[in-house]
Length: 86
Length: 530
Image 1 (cartoon, chains in turn yellow, cyan):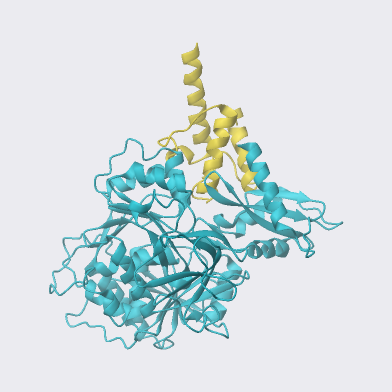
Image 2 (cartoon, chains in turn cyan, brown):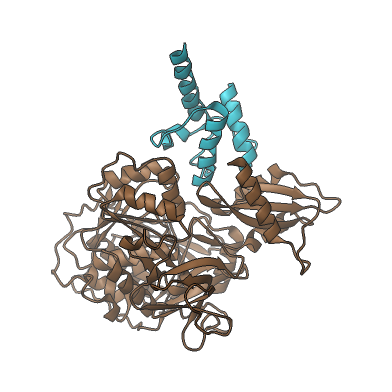
């Protein structure tokens, strides 16, 4: 588990009361963990903690399938920012 | 109790392939649904269609003829059932689907009473409703896997197994004031109540809605609201009774999918709760999107901030934006704000819809002058028969037929109404009515000895819940455990967002938990964060 995944898992554990068996590969949508209210908090959390702003197109099911897919999107965004700065 | 699992075995009934039957009259908006005796007859007339689409479910298309045939098969099943008698309550526990449409009209065509229940209902609430209604049959979909409680047996039915007989006709005996459906909702005391609606209630409210909303036969409405609730039920009725198409697509969790669905299906309307519209605006989902087919959007089921309503209206122009108001006890709708009045009467719920009277009264039932707050009362043919098994069936209505909405309101000099609070603790979340007691009792039930209070607050464009906990001396409960239990048993809209532990309760003058103080504290916390 990388740092981004751990942060996201921590946030969701705090907010959603996930079962112990829930991990970074578990399906957030099929399990019903992510509803519209939690989703919006998650997007704001990502903005606050990682400085990554999600646009309408980013807030799509494919990106929020699992913590892994979501962390990958966040990391990719952070990467491309760093490259631009460098 | 028996569970009937229904399915369409020929799922793709392309709209063009249905056999063309007589081009009998189809009920249009001008033909007066209000004058038909019952909902089954109104449906039967409207569905004698020429193979047009009644429902599009992602890539499947169900013609009006397919739905008519399927409803006929549900009717036939019920009438041949040894435990079923006309007038019996039949529970529908399904998501929005072609199966739901077939079951809804099939039960009414068999002279039954429809009791729709949300698939994700809590187990104990489900048991209580089944005990109270004693339905001989519960109808569900073969592809749903929800547990069905105390079912004695399961029966499967292919909805297209038998073709519609050429001479099929609905000889329904139910008339105007007979019970047609029961909608369960949260009551002002926290106990679930069954709102009893007659055929007249349903038809009168549909007729009123058709008089102010431009719903026509070639409409394709994106139907995101659950049909098992009053608002969604009104969408189902108005659209199916004029022969319009409903589209099931997109996920309300992801606003972008709603916009994609509007585009892909060339939808002409979207009706939703305030939370969805604030999400669409927050994520700028409607920026740079062309929706040339869109005719209107409408909001009800809670308050959308006036500035958001105006933003939305500008964003979707020339399509129109309707702010509406209603409640289950009035079938669905009571008031609407004509789109051109949105800027002139910001924050208003509008004025009474055709066929409905609204007034604001004081405690002595005297009408109050404009600007003065009072109780909002409503009268019309859409006001319910009463509550199911309520002892006093007309408890919510005064003798002259006025319904006490439970809302406090003012009216301005132009006759536009404004809500200014509720007299009970009822909360509206994502269009659902929730009483704090339901959740407080749930928490106490799972954590004996713990005291709980649930307080609503506003955050990021929606109403949310905060749970306050006071534990006894020997109790130790942690936040994570409460969240796990809530997540497991409660539908998402009832799960508290915040949990706070207190040493003792703030009390008001009456010695009760001071909910106002807790609410004020939550507001101050919100302001600090934002």
